[in-house]
Image 1: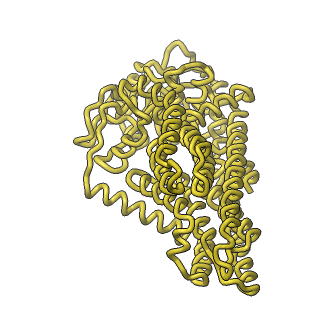
Image 2: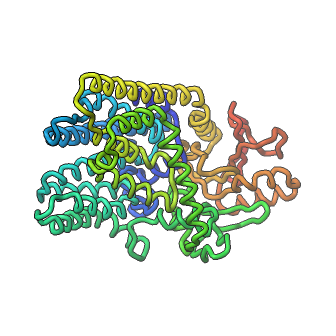
Amino acid sequence: MGLLQAWIGAQFFNPDGMCYVDVGRAFTSHHWRDAFNSYWSALYSWILGVALQVFSRSPQSQLPIVHAVNFLDYLFAFFCFSYFLRIAFSTLRQSENANANLEHLPEFALWIAANGIFLWATLTQISVWDVTPDMLVAAMVYLIAATILQIRKTASLALFIKLGLLLGIGYWFKAVMFPLSFLFAFIACAAAPRRQKRYLKTAVALLLFAVVSAPLATMLSIKDGRFTFGNSGWLNYSSYVSPGGRVRNWQGQPAASGTPLHATRKVFANPDIFEFAQPIAGTYPPSDDPPYWNAGRKWTFSIRAQAGAIAHHLILYTNLFLLDQAGILVVVLALLFCAGRTREIFMAYWPLLAIMAGALGTYALVHVENRFLGAYIVLFWMALLLGVKLPSSTARNRLSQYLLIAMAVSCLMSVAGDNYRLNRDSASYTAALDLQVAKQLEAAGVHHGDQIAMIGRGNWDYYAQFAGSKIIAEIMDQDTTTFWISSPELRTEVYRAFSGTGAIALVTRPPATSLDPGWIKLGDTPYYMRWLQRTHALPTAP
């Protein structure tokens, strides 16, 4: 299933992916200022950068290599989940004799159901084709959860050392793991048996977490001029919760959002043209380093805005757990009704529920996307299934096996359906058109390293990355209509303003076929370009 999704999405790309690739290439090029990014994942980006440095020979080979790395990440997550299952099943066997009249669910059927849940949560919520570090974060969550289950039985110092190392590595994959690590350490401490120096051992785990995290946090803090473990949290809070407003080309709106310290330069008004050639490198600087361009931005606390964000995310959680995979819900409810003792079931594996609740609660305060939650969904359902005990009976045992296998079948059908829809709607995700545009730009005379301008959505214009160009100025998508309906005289002024930014060419996907003289159609694509610098001759259309 995972390989099929990787094959379907071999040419898929996303705006975040373009930024991760840029950060990775900064790492392999030893541009440390851009390689240590306080918004995008460091370690995931660097892995992509190394893979592209070693294996990529052309722009066309970039996407398959990126998705090959993602597939390896998926396999790693699968093996981490398998390790978690092995630890969880060992705890089941240790508690088998607690009550001779009650039995846990059949292990083999439970294993089948668990893998079905994993496939559904991983391939439909996180996905192999989406270029993000969330698959690796999920892998670390499984390892952390397994370690906490082990600590619950034997709180050895070695396990706490292992926990601290895993927490630190998780932070290198995503900044949100920094605050969550303290929560996970607290859960481990609470789960550990008493009288085993658990407080001291937890302190050791946190110390090791600090040691592993320190290099990244130190570099980010030096770059930022203040202590920080990452800037995605406050920036997302300011944008999504309070006071709101866009992140790209932020100019100080709305009111109370702060005073820009070094925002992108507005060089023309109505339509607005923003320039951002320096000092940030990358394909599209406003997305490559949002904290730099939003320096001076503030978040404000508003009870109404916070309550609204939480309510919105609670609705998303309700859909995710109650509607998106009804097969899991029905089977789990049936088993809970048969077992009774609901409180005992919830308490049997409460550390897994606490991990899930802590993570979902943290995300609900700011911003939630389904891809953030894959591992926590799995832990929730596994905590309930692992805690179920049924009265000893051959008929009940067989019925529970059938229910668990039916759950797995339901999950597999959902994944297969998702892959089918992904293949059917592939035109919405593929970057094949951008690869064609990149070829046409090269044929027209735009060379690797050239600076260009664009009209539209810069963070979606992957062709610039494939062509090795840097977008340094833009008219944003909300102002494109204003530009196209303006007078020829005003458009001439706009071209002159774009030329003043240093861009050699302007690229766009116009809504109309009647264009000003000077536009060149880029092959059979719907994109056009226009030279802005007189040093470039006007070639014929490629």
